[in-house]
Image (tube, rainbow, N blue to C red; front, side, top):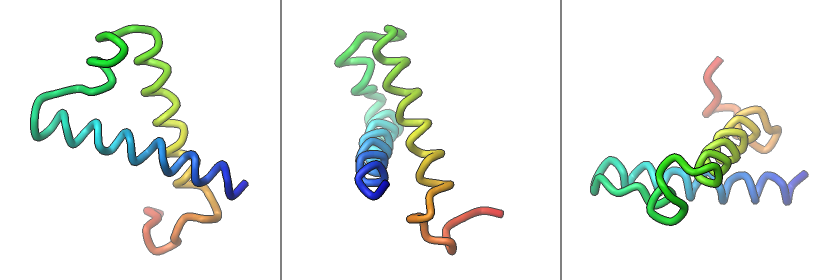
Length: 68
């Protein structure tokens, strides 16, 4: 499970970098690499979202960062 948490964290960081690029530079890296609205782009967004939820519910998450 620890390896899964590291993979999930890595994907969430990639997602956060992408959102930072969108916010600061109006550049969407995922769409630039895989095409706007492509199936692969949607899969990547879904996987990053699932990883975020996994980290939120994970025992490895810091309880002080959880929102109850």
